[in-house]
Image (cartoon, rainbow, N blue to C red; front, side, top):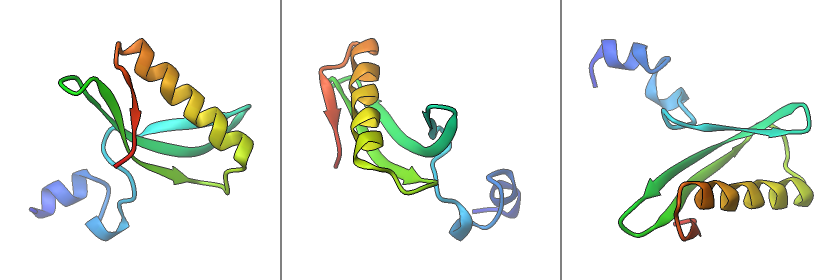
Length: 84
């Protein structure tokens, strides 16, 4: 990767934690993490590649994130959510 591309991504590659299109995870009024996900239209699923925790996620927050991901999949007219 070129130096310009590395700089455009925000620094050396070993410091980059999330993908380019990471979605913020908000709980109440706090940013608690980010989700790397891709819509696979052919398979009709939302693929969750990773959930990056900015703070330790409780079971309640994890359940809420899962519910929101399922809602997002429905909004995108996808059949469900999968994690590889």
